[in-house]
Length: 470
Image (cartoon, rainbow, N blue to C red; front, top):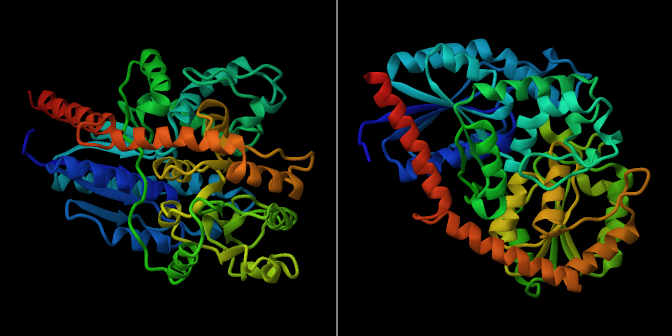
């Protein structure tokens, strides 16, 4: 290994889940390759998320960070959903990003840029500075394959994807129905779709891809991607958050879990940005209650938008939105925690027997790494795609049925909860995820597939530097 310091720049988006994932990747990179130094650059809407500030306080000395001048949320088009506002804010931050990158190139021998897929405007700027450029892809390789295939799919399919009668074939992946494509692809006339199509076309500027997944679950997808695109695709995951937090409700959650039987509790959480409607909160509450199973539910105030909390959660007390008398009736059965809980510590607890999840990829990987079978309840972004992979591909999750009003009713909830915790299919699901858990552990070992992928990435950058100096 060469000892000369190699500098990388990394750019993410103003969303904690993406920021945390790319920083955890950087921490793993510098742990195995001490000669790499990284500067993380974060576009900002109003102010950095408090969770990000806390998270960045424990960085190793060879990772630095800077926040770009904030874009004011009030200056973004309020009629657009959070995902669109985030992308527009990132695009507006590119002049500031160019100045930050120029400063880094002046003060260091900057070798490469690693960009979030939704900040890939930065790839064009990387070319201006003759940098090697990679996309760090926080979701699955299946989602990456879809994104790379989307410009072709756009030409092949003329109707809305949800109305397409035939299954959609993504290179290297199981067939899916059009309705399970990401939400921002469901209205082809929308600005959300136009933005994602534009970003997907820009993927060709990248010199390679770093994907937060591992070979046991997505090696076939990567083989198809490399064969088709002739560019390196490195599975460097599972990259998950492992650090503890000192949030005030942490000890209460864990103390409560200590008094429960092994594998008896269903953990219910919709991630860092997911919200349910008031009707769906009611149905979930009654479904959990009638299931008779123990539960630990992280509850947010309801909203008509499934990702309303993505740009900041409401200040309302979530507990006031529960059905009348629910907390009293279920005080021996479950625990409801407002807004936040220490997820990895909960999932690793011996009393947890299942995870009702929105299928965000960070949560999905945490569940796999910690061996917890899932109930797949996708809300937004690429989560329906992940749900298909989990239920039909890997078979480590059960999926409840939504009715014609896009609601999962209480009877359906009770049945799927009981099946996961007590049923035969739940038992088979538990066995399958135990196999994946062991594979994830192996991938992260010093001689594991994901660690070797980091070395291949390192070698590509070192070879690039050698060639540029000749």
